[in-house]
Structure formats: C-alpha cells, structure tokens
Amino acid sequence: MDHEKKIEMLQFMLEEKIQEKNVLRNQMENLQGELKQVDMAITTFQGELEKLSGNKLEIQQPIIKGSEIGEAAIEALERLGGSAHYSEVKQEIEKMYTISGLNDKSRSDSVWTYLNKRDDVTKLGRGAFKLNTTASAAEKKDVCRKYGLAPVEDTHWDMGVLHQAHENLSPEDLKKFLDEMSRLSGKDWIDYYRKILTGAKKDTENINF
Image 1 (cartoon, rainbow, N blue to C red):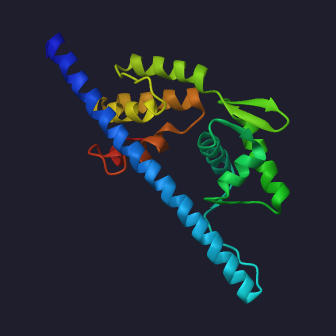
Image 2: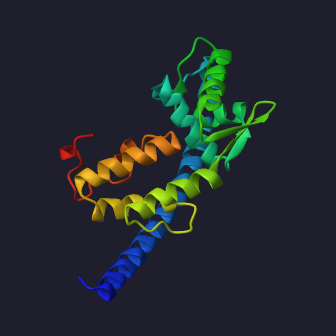
C-alpha cells in the first residue's frame, strides 16, 4: 500500500472511530440519566416499603473485595470529575456495588487504602485524591504511537486507541501493547480491552493473555 493510500485509510478509520465514540458517549450519557432515574425510584420505593413494613431493607448488589475495590474506586473517581474525598468515592462505589468489610469504617478504610496504593492517583491531603491524567496520558500516548496507533486529543482517547489496536495489530503485538499500557497506568488494559470490545470481530479468547 502506497503512502497516500495509507494516509487516506487511516483518516477514514479515525473519522469512523470518532463517530463511533460520539455514539457511545451519547449512549453512556443516556444510560447515566436512566441510572439516576432508576436510583431515585429505588430510593422512593424502598423508603415507602420500609415505612409500611417497619423493617429496614437491604438492596443486594454485587460484592467487591481486594483489588476490585481499587478498580471500582478509580472508575468512581473518574465519574466524580477526577478528584474527590475518599468518602465521596466510597458513596459513589456503593451506588453500584457492596464493598466487602466488617463495618462502614472498614469499608471506608479499604477505599482509602486502595486509592493510596495507586500510582495513577495523587494524594491531595485531608483524605482527598486526584487522578494523574495529564502526565500518564502523555506517556501512554507515546506507547500508542510506537505501535502505529493515533490517539485522538480527547477525554475518551483510550477507547479509540483500543478500537484501532483491535483492527490493526496482530495478536502478538496486541498482547505486547496491552501489557505496556497496563504497566504504565496500573490498570488492567487486557480486561479493559475485553470489556470495551465484547462481541468484536477478533476472537480475544484465542489470544494467549
């Protein structure tokens, strides 16, 4: 393939993925809105049921423990805008999961502990944490370019890069790329890849992860 054709192909693929990303973003925003409405309905129904029955109800949610708490904390911190007090992070996690622990204090301590361990998080003091988005993003984008991928200057650039990697890298290079990104970010990019691209064309189960 000549140089001009390759440029055209990459431009087309880039535009296609940007459009795909915008669709996914709209879907995500709609889902977040629906989730808030469902949360409000659950709270209302739970409150009314507790009044009528006189019993305190516990809503069953998936239980997370160990490193799962750390991953959930990062996702919660992202949803909270990138910085928050660990108690706010805990509250955000508990909208979706039940944190394993003996009591509320032990669950709060677990969130603090796992945030404190993360290389991609900065301690701001007084229990507040912030995601290291700028410096780590630059390093990760350098790795992307090494593999011939073109990260877009966007808050969701990592999703676009994963789609590019899926379409363009061999299974061996894909494995190396995901390993490097995992080491840089402290996040399991292999798991992230599988979640983002569930049902995609390339058979991820045949890649020796």
